[in-house]
Length: 413
Image (cartoon, rainbow, N blue to C red):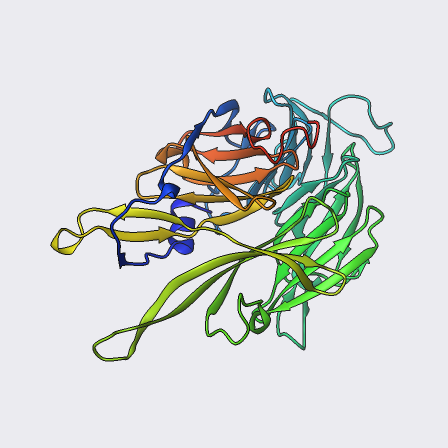
């Protein structure tokens, strides 16, 4: 289960410094939320298994993607991928029949039956559905895990290579799978993200203990580039700096030719009385545009943290602290970040790379909707979310494509 509260605790650091004035970053703009539809918990086509209804192993990933108003939900616990309209109508499903009952809403596609003959349910022996992406031609890319007998131990890194990216056609038919060398290639280590870039490439981000791996594939499944970013070789804002880098996320740039990498930096915290190291403190955050052809960094931007003020500091002083926002993705000329705070609000920030301005928005998410969450940023700048409450999952969106300056008029939804 991926809790926003837990994510905030993991990605936030309290930096204490005694200052007086309030920061402009504390101001935010409220953005209207639109609730599109809800899904109950269960095993039928129009239900989700978010919390491992039958008990047993830990919950698997559930992820959401959206393309041209159609929603795709990859539900790991139920071993299925379901396609919904924006009204919540079930359009199609790919499912493991060993973990799901016989479809009732959808017709089951028979072997050899003509495609495109209505709403269909296709079977596939999913094991651990996870990350999902959808191309412009409606090719669906889905993370899955191999059975134990097909897993490989990488001798160099020691990592277990046991994940692949399955490809399905627009009618739900299985096409093939992507590995590190392309179609049918070596499995990936643990997958962090699967993306369909603006130029309709598939980008797979995976990781080992020593490095992050980024593989780019064209629409045919051929490898375009492979990058290995070692943990001890993360970029620094200044050469020779003693800052401690921590990679936040790697996402494709909307230009289809670049990657965006966000790194947070920390420094040793020294006790002035003893001159000894007592921990680490936040220093700064930077986003870099990487050229995957040579792993160079042509551009970089310093990303402001969210500054907050606590007036109840010692001796009446104002205690200042920061929250480090998490990179969600990129759309148009903007980078987008998520952060939650102690005030119970969730904040979505847009950083315009051309002007270097950061605009902070507050979005309406109730605490009881954060039992599980999955966010998706479309290439048009629409923020979509699957929010898990106690009794139902809610599919919502915020139309940032209509209000963010760097997005208006750049792409037609």
